[in-house]
Amino acid sequence: MISLILNRIARVVVHIILLFSIFMLFKGHNEPGGGFIAGLMAAVAIVLIYITYDLKTVKKLMPVSYPAMIALGLFFAAGTGLGGVMLGYPFLTQTFDYFHIPLIGEIELATALSFDIGVFLVVVGATLLIISTLGEGSK
Amino acid sequence: MMETLTFIILIIISLSIALCMIRVYKGPTTPDRVIALDTVAVNVLAFITVLSMHLNTEMFFDAVLVIAVIAFVGTIAIAKYLMKGDIIE
Image (cartoon, rainbow over all chains, first blue to last red; front, top):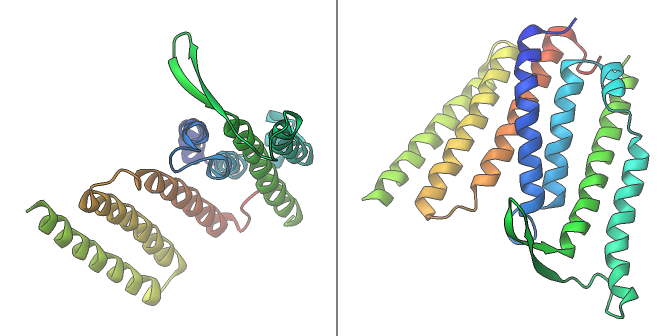
């Protein structure tokens, strides 16, 4: 039995929270924000879908294996660090450059962003793995 | 002038949080306590916003959004637990 009010509210709010999470991800490494808090916000948005519907619906909507997501995130984060080693710099050396992208304009892309994406995937995977396991166990 | 005004507003919001905490302590039923805690969260949001006006900085606005999202989802989870006894079906 799905609550009508919660259903209507969640359909709007989930998009806003996910947009805010992406905003935090790309704003990090210069200002407050970054991979951890962005991952936490994305996890909160998906937990809201879990609360509104049930475990089966989310599994059908999002057929992702959470342990694989954690592994992919760790691969990204470690790969960012090892990229510096390959070029002869110390581990986790970072650099940045300015690029011109059509429709958006001049933006700054740093290798810290790739590390942040790794942290994002690890946090989303770990949080959702814990919460979905707890939800299955309570039955 | 502006600093005095924001300082007075901060004191009033602190009093409001204290009153909500009294309701959390006394509240006869659990829904009373949940509503009081949600109101505490809203008051904390207002407090941080006025504090960032007082200190003339923009750094706290992200914290305001994050606390708003987490308080919203937390209140929904507690409400569903009280209604059905199970948060994720």
